[in-house]
Length: 251
Image (cartoon, rainbow, N blue to C red; front, side, top):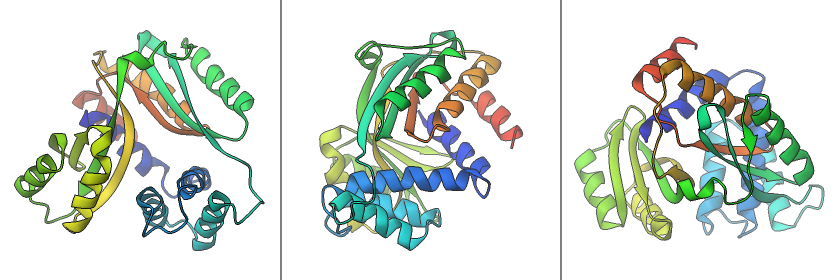
C-alpha cells in the first residue's frame, strides 16, 4: 500500500511552490473548517490539531487558518456551509475510484467529477457500486531522522495497529477506525512526529496493470485531485516501483 502514499508524496513535491499552492490552501481551509465543527481548540480537538499542523507545514498564513477555524465554529458567518461527500466510479482499465469531496454545492461537484471520469473513458457510479471494494482504515505516517522501527512497531501493535511497514516516506501504520484516537494519543505521548493521520479508504484487493496503463490511471487521479472540491482520491490499483520511477522521472 505504500506505493499509494509515495505517489501522493511525489505529487505534493511537484505542486509545491507553483500556482497550485493557492488551491492547496483552499483544500486545507475546508479541512480545518470541517474539523473545527467539533471544537475550535486544537489542544482539545485532535482532528483540528492535525489539520492546523498540516496547514502550518505548508506555510498557510495564520490569519487564513484562524478564519477557517471561525467558520467551522460558527463565529464567522462569511463562509459557505461545507459538507463531506463521497463519490464512487470507475476509471480506465476498470480501476475503481473513491473520491472524497468537501463542497458547498453538490450539483457543481458531481458534474465536475463525472466530467473528469467520463473524458478518460470512465464513469460515475451509484452509491455502493464501488465502496464494497474498499475498507475504511485509520492511517498514520511517522517521519523523523531518529525513528526506531522496532520501538514504533511495538508501540503501534500495543495500541491497536494491524499493519506497520517501513517505506521510503517513513513508517506507515494501518489500523481499524475505532483505534484511531488510541494510536494518535500513543504517538503524541511518545513524542513521535506524525506527518499524516487520517481515515482513508483502502482497497481490499488491488489490480495490477502495465507501467503505461498505471500512469494513465494516475493521470486521471491527478485530474480529479486538481478539482477544488476534491480532498482525497482513492483507487484499487497497485502502484509499482516502475511506475513510481517513471513518475519521479517526470519531475
